[in-house]
Length: 260
Ligand SMILES: Nc1ncnc2c1ncn2[C@@H]1O[C@H](COP(=O)(O)OP(=O)(O)OP(=O)(O)O)[C@@H](O)[C@H]1O
Picture (cartoon, rainbow, N blue to C red):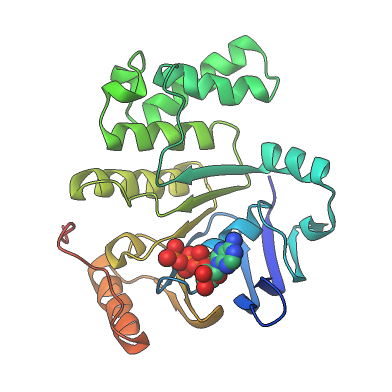
């Protein structure tokens, strides 16, 4: 388990010559163990690019990303693939579950790849399914369950290896308001009970209001940062909406979610 992730002066350019896009522009910040950090910003502001670089899926153009003292920008492809397996968990909008396996088997597969023993695998899988409340549908196939249940299974799979960092890119994007709320409450539970460190990209203010801190990106740079502190979620949501309107009215606090 890593204690701290440091993003130092990271830049990312796509293309070359006249055709250059600066997707991430000298971004620096730190994520401490146990934080639940949101990344917000308009479409094209660099959120996914930043997340992908932290996930060692995409290379930085310049700058460094440290997991404790480990600089992932200096690693070889083989080292990165090993690093991802050992340290990171992923939750995407599209669930990415294997349709030919049951929900339980999907979680077990992630643990088998890690080379754990059978008894240990069964115990972890059971604990995760209980925590994420999918035990009653564990023998169903992904196409037989709801989007929310699929997404909670994807979370269980991502969390099963006790990752240093859980990376979520628009995890509520395909969910209705109730399923979104259940998933976000699940993230909070993972964050509080498992001390999971979570980094979530979202353009939805309601989803972001569950985070403990939010970084707002504009044109590839950090434009603003909000820390929730002791405020309740309603007050935090209002503050997020205020920042978004300051940034240009790009809030997507749509009607799909209401405050509870
Ligand atoms: N593979 C790529 N090749 C070229 N340009 C890219 C590539 N990926 C992203 N970009 C560009 O980099 C910028 C940042 O894109 P990115 O996907 O990180 O934004 P985003 O904030 O995640 O947007 P969205 O909310 O729409 O997903 C955009 O201008 C985008 O067009």
